[in-house]
Image (cartoon, rainbow, N blue to C red; front, side, top):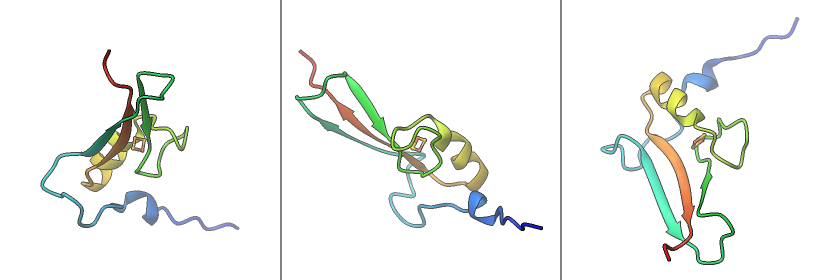
Length: 77
Ligand code: FES
């Protein structure tokens, strides 16, 4: 019989970074991008890792965490 721990799924992964913010999101403008916006996962919960699929919302609600994606943005023309 296989025992699987679910404890890791309910723990916050951000113990100290910018905890005063509801969600830590950073963005970088990159002129060479082919798409206007690409979001990279930083919560390790995405089903489309390394891209963000919005799973951080459920993780943040379950754990009280505040993680969010890194956004790469193409400059506005
Ligand atoms: Fe991980 Fe959005 S799914 S940051």
